[in-house]
Length: 191
Image (cartoon, rainbow, N blue to C red; front, top):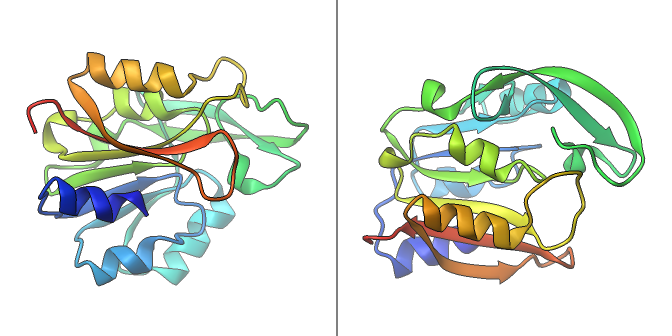
């Protein structure tokens, strides 16, 4: 995962992590092995949030989507599977929708967390705009250069927005399994 390389390259001392779009918590074992604490998982699908609670009882699981401000959101679940669920309507056929709680990370994550990882299918800027970036040393976002979701920002839009917020890309790598998708790590401009 790009996260570990950038932590080393940038000499960032990791403390805690918030992983938005945790799905089944596939990365959590690595977070534990690295000694990250706290580990906060944000997952809007009830069955996946419950899986994370059972699988990772030491983690804090927030059953919600993350966005600019608290409230509710309509979550689209494509027929392609839950890993593609998003608050942005996918261009693929939709299996169903679900109204879910929405949180702003600034309201639920404190300064003990200095890493944000978001795999949110087009909602990257919503997550970032609801976070307190002043507490963070590293932001890792999964982005796409193809319009997979209606009105979702593309990779270049995300990079430009992060630059406007004072963050620069430290590393961008193509996703190992999905063409046109990238893992992009950002650090503060001053770093």
